[in-house]
Image: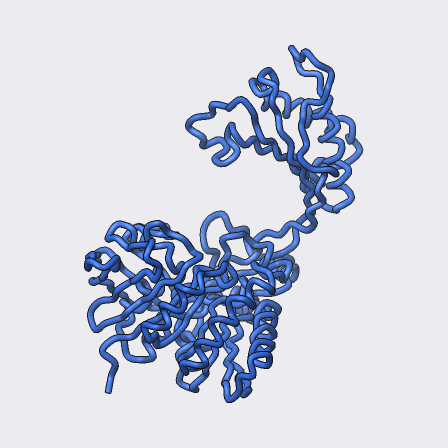
Length: 455
């Protein structure tokens, strides 16, 4: 007999961010049918994908997973992790897999079926689809995908939709570790597997992937319960201090989209234009009217990052009102003095950037109110072809700026106040998205391989 409703517990907006255990227990008391959590994003840029590192620490990830897996296996409900390790490439998935195996052993959990869905795409596949005209850049800012850039990209991942996750659920997996996934897909998949409406399932997934961020006050560090019904869904906070309102849930529906109510995903388009958000009196909100359609050609989003340079940066403070009044002029003069001193170094081998927090450090040239305060936080960085060159140039920028004799200066002491010693921070490699493309595929299962481990 089909379920009348389906409950999904979302512990937090990012695996490893943490959540109140009391809130999670309250969620488990509601008898959820699945525990689903998003673990990744490209929000932080290309570095984690290019460097093969996780977004959160092992300790943070394990702390969250231990609570989720122990409770999920006791309740005999699936636990699903999307975009494992942050970027969802092989190294990130294996990292997450090892933590889960460690937890299962330490907790003495047996008779567990673990599914791992890999999202890595072979370079030769991308190259072939590119030659066939079946691979296109996602936006005008993406550089052309040349053979050199493709070869310089260590790993390529694609965002999976719901199809491979449903296949793992059909195989009766207890724990599903997804490589890079379209954020709502793990939530949508488990509901669709039980026969619930695709549009409602994806819309609920869009909200639950950030957990309690749709509540008031919003946060990604608290649990949220989603309840799917035949023609609607309910989002319910699990902490007494939070409430969902029609505005808070509708506002989160618009979150991270380039269109107010159209949301593109693998092989589908979610249309939220006619949604109705209704407060139901207990801090929960019921949503109706979500619509979805399939695209004529199934496309998946590819992501790849390549190393392009090295960075060194300095953080400093400025308190002199005379310097603050002409800070950008002085920075331009400091730049020129460093260029002149290192005239033998090709200018294309490095760049010097200044970020002035308190003036226009967030919005840059778009800042409508460039009115400096009584002090500024200055961050300057040098990006160069080698770490040694970045260190050298940054050191010169720092010493030049520190003692630069600007017009009107009354003291010969330093212009900059440094909070740290040493002041110069060699950051390491800098990455950029070399692949940010849409690729045509036969269907949602073609590129995503699933493996099973019986524990």
